[in-house]
Image 1 (cartoon, helix red, strand yellow):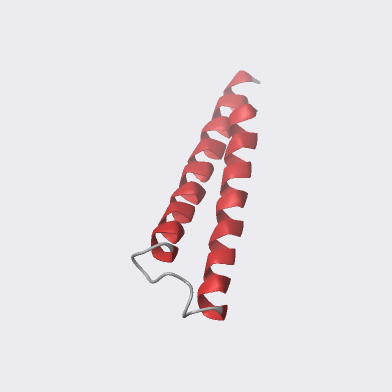
Image 2: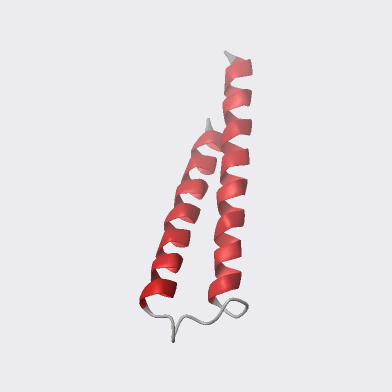
Length: 68
C-alpha cells in the first residue's frame, strides 16, 4: 500500500511540475531557459518522475493484490 501511495504521489507531482513548466515556457519564452538549459532538462526530470511514479504504483498494486 505504501508503494501505491508513493507512486501515485510521485506521478501527480511530476504531472503538476511538467504542466507548470510547459505553462512557463509558453508564458515566458524569453526567460524560460531554453530546451537544453534549465527548462528542457527540468521537463525531462518531470517526465521521469511520472514514469517512476506509475511503475511504483503498479508494483504496489500488484504486491497489495497478492497479499489479499
